[in-house]
Length: 429
Ligand code: HEM
View (spheres, rainbow, N blue to C red):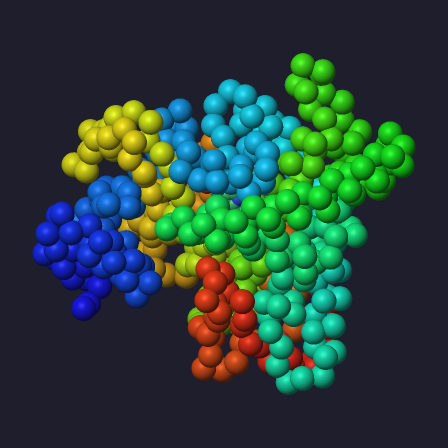
């Protein structure tokens, strides 16, 4: 079936045969999500299905994510809190935890850290790449041997959690993310594995927090944990070291798989466009400024979070006053489709073209609205620098003909991506 026929095929299935309709939807998502979204944007921009209401146009996605009092994170919030074992900013809306701890996170994950985090990332990335290449094989695995390790080492150094093994951080956050973000059928085994992993990571972080606390009031270097330990909030906030731990575990969980996958998918999106790759290599050699734009444009084509779900608490009109105006009934799951909004031809000029330097408002890779990425200042330097360090090594590239060959190995996230390990001198930009 051509994907353009999706709506005809969907409508041909009787409305009461929800399993068939859902199966077709899932198949079409896998077979050709971009074409499916294009068809929805054109013909059914607010599309109600048994798994939720797909919101596919750019302004409508922004509208949903700007109204957290109506469209809440209630779809995954309770599961996320099960997994974290504590309240967390991404699991709540409203006046208490979300408002307060988002403010706290903004102070702790400070924008002024960015230059230091950029340098840290460059240094760590080069070391990990040297290790991967030094293995002596003609190829290495960009996910396992580079992105996963480099992302973990950067997070641990930046947050102040050095001492936790990279492998454990990666494996815990993978099971946690799988349980709260990609377990549509609520498989109890996946859920239980996520809860166990959450406990494991919590205990590792709590021990480090304790150790740093007992080293003295201003203990430790100038990292995020040091800043947290020096911060005194009024007693009425009841913000003890358990909250410090919960926030750090939440940050690690929000970061590790994202950073790993973005590094790999950005490189893949460049590699499948040879001209863009050559330009990105040139930009990389000049420094970060121009190169970063190539990475964010690449991620528009393969974002880590393509869809974010929200729970609609009360009947609400979306896209009021337009031909697509739709009432979303209370209790609906609303699927805000970032991956579609970033290709909205009524907002973006020639969205299918690869054009670095598009207006930042068109790029929703770090989310939008009340829950927009709290770690965005760090993410904005870590992800592009992890990619740039690879671009600076012309010998390290996906295997010719296998540029699209991400291997998910039965999980929701890419686990393997083979690259050549050509031994070419490292430029020092
Ligand atoms: C590395 C690449 C990253 C990507 C692609 C990314 C992406 C995102 C996205 C799409 C959201 C919105 C989720 C939603 O609306 O459902 C989000 C939220 C969040 N991110 Fe990131 N993120 C990254 C890095 C980080 C880092 C470095 C941190 C912290 C150290 C972090 C912490 C958070 C937190 C706490 C939230 C929830 C904010 C809230 O609920 O108010 N992220 N991120």
